[in-house]
Length: 253
Image (tube, rainbow, N blue to C red; front, side):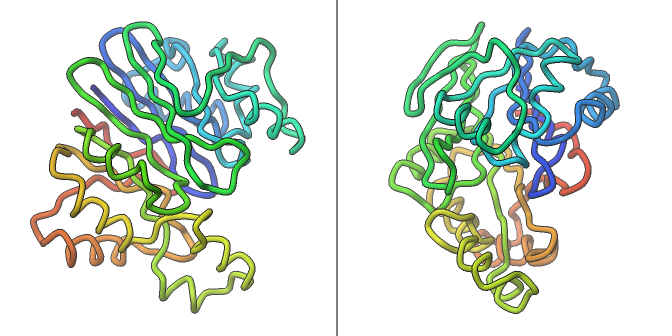
């Protein structure tokens, strides 16, 4: 399985996952041209992608899904509640959207895809597990908190893109409004560096590859991310960072 984070964070999200003859994108929060150019840097034609799966209705995950469909003829999949919520935000929804239900497992081509409900403050948010029979990869951002089903999901994975959104001290001392600060650290917000690291320490023994993403540009730093994870997991811990305004390296699992 091959994975590239094309962008990760509040400015836009899009993750590429490839297994065998199947190529998928998860989320469409960056422009179609941006996704096309970043994939082409790895020798991948965006028109060879088979579908786009949407995690939840927030704009940084959905803003360009209509452009992906219109320009590159990519089918778009999301839950019905997510589709309805996107429409209320004024985001254009492409015609012929395919639907799946949260907390289900379904087949797409030669892959099994699991959509696990999250407590993030979205209409019907999910994280995804992609399973090709040999490797299981999780798209695990915008989680809210370490909800009851999450440890078992992490324990089942060979690779993961996991959010490590904020440093608590930077968030507390930063310029965000109190409302925004409270939202981020609430049970419907995001995981901090320490929550991410503790989750991996307790439940990530099977993991061969870890990508840390959805790292706040304002309330976090690479140094804080790595310091927290090294403190809890040890200096031997290795990961790939999903950049806020660029693509990551290609990760093979």
